[in-house]
Length: 172
Length: 263
Picture 1 (cartoon, rainbow over the protein chains, first blue to last red):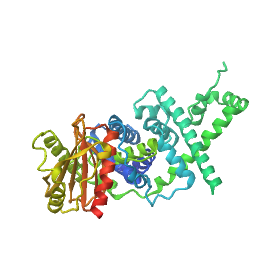
Picture 2: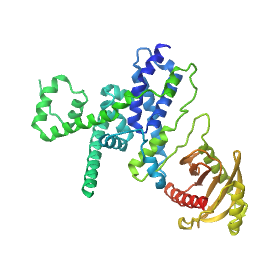
Picture 3: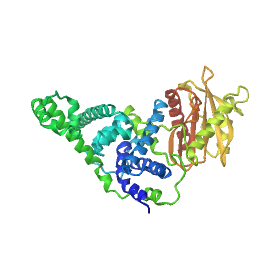
């Protein structure tokens, strides 16, 4: 196996974690990683020697994610089929999460995709502002404001969730 | 060295390791002097720890074989976004988060090699709608005035217990129906019209093994299909109505069709 492929293989766990934080559902996240890997392998020649495989792959995956989110947004409001809401909302059974984890994962899903990506890139994946700005293709100032707003929004959502939980406990 | 004023922005920078080392001492002093900012910082540190903890387990999961295979296989697959199903879930999740009600969105362009069953269904339904809804005199084979016969005939030919939904509450009256080819099998098309002459159609087939649902539009300004498939049947509601209205019609049609199938 050549070095490039070995390097790509080594990045899969990180790509999966990033995808999971963007999409929540395990299968969907792995589908995104799959798209990313397929695209990466077709474009192997575009990968310049010396460029970090992580940054290269994260850039590819981020573009796939954002492109699709924009397309979805352009189509406007979603069709609401409440009959099926519970089903769509249910997390796969194998995803055992603590209440705290579930709440923060839910909250993360509720913030805008741009802010979510920026926050995750820095707070979970540990990229520097410069690296993250480069991967996301935005100026550093934009990245910073997305991170700040993302954190603020996340805090508000977590507070709401905690309040709702408190009310439920009181009602019991 | 000039002491600069710090702000909330610096809390993020400090947290993310972006605050220059030489400013660190002054920043810490500022934080100590501003309890509100200190509390904010402590909170963000805790949230970040929770975020990391929530996703830490992913790194320890075994890498799925299908992902390894892509990298290890010799010939790369020449496709653009071939497996793109993930973003439907993304859209659904986004809408759940925003609306809190639930829903599913499917997008427009599928660049994959093979059309998934629901896209074929949606495309057939849209094609039928475009062709027949535009017809004034020959839109249907059996008119609504002969509704009983229409239901019996289509049920027998399609192989489903088909009840034409009553969509009067949504402002639509049945015009009639026709039988259509759908892949290897047949489909029933029911056409409805409102007082303004706006038409929608229901497209039902007995051929489906997949359980899925979503919306589909083949062109930017063309009609849209809201579809659902389950074992044994597939159905799409097609029209050029505003999304909310089409959804209301689809929901009503859905529950009535399901009730009819089970009767």
